[in-house]
Amino acid sequence: MDLNKLVRQISEKWSSLSTAKKSAALVMGIAFVLSLIMLSRWVSDTSYAPLFTDLDARDASAVVEKLKEAGVAYKLADQGSTVLVPEDRVYELRLQLASAGIMPIGGMGFELFDETKLGMTDFELRLNYQRALQEELRRTIVAMEEVEQARVHLVIPEPSVFIEEQAEASASVVIKLHPLAKLKPEQVKGIIFLVANSVENLKPENVNVIDMSGNILSEEVALEGDTGLAISRLKQQELKREFEKNLESRVQRMLERIFGPGKVVTMITADLNFDTRQVTRIEYGNDGVVKSEQIVREESVSNSNSAGGSAGTDSNLTTYPGLDRAGESSNHSSESIQRQYELDKAQETVIYAPGEVERLSTAVTVDGQLTDQQIAQIKELVTAAIGYYPDRGDQITVMSMAFDRSFAEEARAEMEQQAAREAEQKRVRQYIYAALTAFALLLAFILILTARRRAGRLDVAIEDVVPVQDVSAVPIEEEEGPQLDPEKERKIKMREKKRQDVRKIVEENPKEAAELIRTWLSES
Image (cartoon, rainbow, N blue to C red; front, side):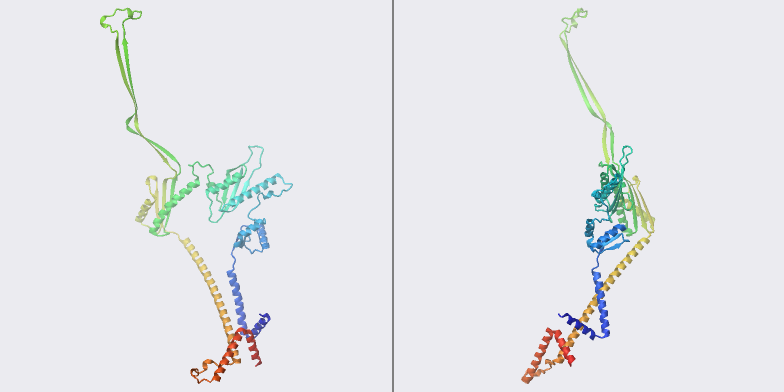
């Protein structure tokens, strides 16, 4: 395609237009270009995400300079303390900056000792060691999934030659958690022992862990060794609150089915005993029972002989014949029984596990006015729901009062306004899309209409140059019989053939045909 010829044709076409048409064409062209620009920006709008946050001026300047060198688009927010980059390149750029030695969110660890400097004092060496140790601990803590950022502060006393004057080391860890993240007690305990075991002469009880809200997380962690029966205070509080929430949820659901959602507030306080007790009870009966029995039997045999005796007074005395029992024997037997009696006894050992309920205090508040009968009915329902036990000291309080709903109404109004704004933005986007679509359709319609008009003018010019009689104008009766003149029929066929040839030439070379017709018209 000849570019010069195309430019000349466009110039001639532009010169042939009137002033009104030129103005309309300019306005439409400018509107079309602006619409394309807005549409392209709308479609290709880049989503930005924070690369680094909470930067000081020096770190932010270093990051921005590096991004400029790499030709990366960026934005600044929060008065220059936050650097935003395209969302799909956040992690890539962080790795690039880290490899280039620009990591504003952290310092240098043991890299401080990669280069040896002459003339350093012992104080400078100790200070650099402390800085490096703090950074290494910070990197380890930040590696936890819940932790977004952390700072470690160590207090390492100077060594002393006197043992009594040796001070203890201490440490403080400040952590920033990710949104909606929470550290478990085991994780806090792990941070404490990580820091304690990394610093010489640092005891775990001298390590404090603090979050960004000022809460001391290390206070709720038991550092002593677990014995299987000891329960930390934090664990006890969690169990206590879980038990209370379970009861509150049951009572709340039951009363909301009666009065409706948002009409009832229930609070339950439970006193739980986490002590482990073992009680042994012994009971004695009235009747005794034989504990043991012992039977002893004894038997003996004795013989008497008077034929002679030993020298002495008794043996020389004269005996009487009737009293002589020489040669006789005697038997002797005895029996004794020993019994031990004991009272009837029953022994029972009871072990009370931790978590026994000592007392329940329940408070129920209902929106609106209640009668005495309704209050009594509510107390009966709550009594059955929580397992009320009066001997334990349980108490139930039911009150009725008007709830303050101003905050809820303000929140609802704000949500409605936000929804209205989002709906308005959605309508505006729909209007923009509709306007762009209508403009594109209008422009396409104008281009098609212009092309058809140009084609119509070309057909008129062809008809003027080669006038052809319409075949449909021939009377029908001429086609039916031999009344049609053969010469006239031949002329009609020749004209139709010429017309078809001209149309074929125009379709194959429209520009050259138009130029030829324009030349004929100018000459005429």
